[in-house]
Length: 267
Image 1 (cartoon, helix red, strand yellow):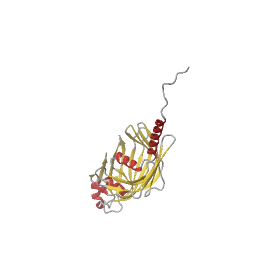
Image 2: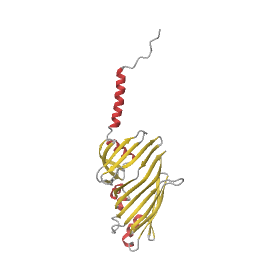
Image 3: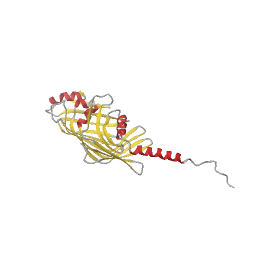
Image 4: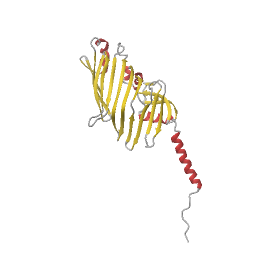
């Protein structure tokens, strides 16, 4: 004759509680408010990037993007219109992020996010967008001093950002055209147009950037590399013949003067 089992089946109410808890967790994840994403963005950027008036959910929402100099800074600028996003989970445990800005994009910025145990990778599909340079003023010095007025055209070409083991790396290419730039520090309008190009790491070489002048009276050039998690840049500025007097004060502010040139060092 078989002995009765010593283990009694769990009472039905326990299964009901367990199911309710799972349902609550699932509902929280699905309907998490967009404000949660804004809070995470502010914390991770130390208050430099803020999402104002968020609406919707973490997965599908919108808000006003604000840039500032960080916690306690008095400088802040808001991007015109709203920024919209959608986050779509994939079967391979990745996330597709689609970003659209009312003011600045004609097509979605498409980013594939891959969480890893040691960090995160983000693959930005080829895209083009146009942004107002006045947004940078909110970041504080030196942008608030220069008060740059220009059109910024961003072009990415399969750009891949990797944040692994607390180390930043870049692969692919991107360029930023600074068109018809002007500043309150010079009477010339505009002072010129410029291109900042980023080349991701290749073989043993670190990610690099290059600055060149497309046209104008203010001549800018320089290059730099990503060392550790910081960009180091060395460049110079000078005035085209006939523009020295109008640009003299601006050159004094841009960097260390060596005769007619201004030496620029960052990092």
